[in-house]
Amino acid sequence: MNWETPIHFARPVRLWSADPIQSRRVSWLELFFDLIFVAAVAQVGVPLGEDYTVHGLVRYALMFLLIWWAWLGHTMYSTRFDADDVVQRLLTLLQIFAAAAMAANAKAAFDSRDSAGFGAAYAVLRAVLVVQYLRARRLKETHRLTTLYSVGLGAAAFLWGLAAVIPAPARFWLWAMALLIDMATPWLAVQYTHKCPPDAEHLPERFGLFTIILLGESVAAVMHGMESQETWSPSAAISAFTGLSLAFGYWWWYFDGARGAAERHVTSGRKTFLFQVWSYAHLPLYLSIAVLGVGVEHVIFFTSGAHHHREDAWILTGAATALMTALTIIGFTSDDAPMRRPSLRRWLVRVALCFAALPASFVATAVLPCILLTYLAVLCAAQIMLTTSDAMDEPKGESKEPELVPDLQSR
Image (cartoon, rainbow, N blue to C red; front, top):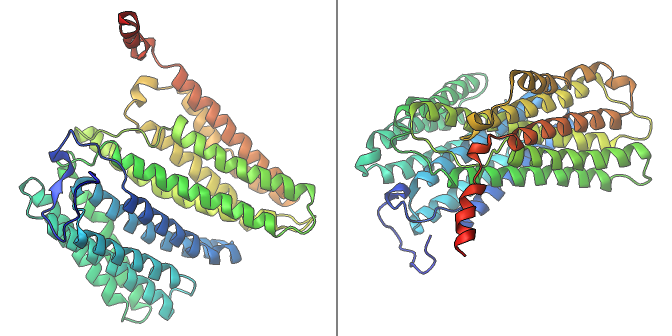
């Protein structure tokens, strides 16, 4: 964005790819938008901290899915279309308010009035996105894509809004139909994705920033747990340090080992498929980060001598397994994955490490909680060592260092 350009009330929407020379970076408004949505995720996670059970997890997962899906919809639109005018900013403000309304109505049961408000707020988010796509529909290059999104998201928004005034259990059937249409729409438009690709740098940067902010919420959860300790026991101290280590390790693995925020060039059908896998793999990644953060806070809260219950141990190890699996998949879909493809033996070791967390649930009730967290941190460290060593073992022919030699000699 050129900061010297005045902001107009309304101007025609254009494709970012129409001006390939212009650098595409995350704007301050987009960063603010991401902060609001991560705050909504944290707010929705409050009931999970009080009910760290399978029931609480299912409830949280559905609400997390809708918040993340709303964020993804806005992000995919903004990475393709340049519409920075007053109208776009007002529409973004409306989306931010709807996200806040979703978080405010996320504490009651599914058959409550609050959950109806949650669905209504989500309907507003989708309706605003429909308006944004209708603004971009005049572009000939993306006419079919924007038409598909407008029709699909519009139908879903109507069902979400209708469900808000329909009592349970009929409301749940409307939710299921709306969610099916909502999630199927991008796949119906996938044939047009590489014809109008998302920005190769901007979109991974958005995902990377969302990851950073979400990991920050995990750190805040550790701090919250630390505040609850009046007299520090060794177990609580180890749990707090290990919880921070896990957040740090997942950051390291995501950005260096899996290269989750590296450029994504969507130039063919195969790369379109890998792009879809990469983007959808962030759902279990983000959900697992949030669930694991709540679980670590839960562990730090434990009084001296307390142990895990079997159910919360399964949730904690299951979240760690899903997180490591998602990071492994994300690493496989990167543009440079073929150049640093590990051997079959290393892949088998990686997969085994992903699922090595689950057996720990059988002994979690008999050992100190900090031991389970330490074990998860060791698994994460092993994965980091494997993925970063793969990057160091790249073929020498792909190295960029020789390109610098003539430049240095010329000087």
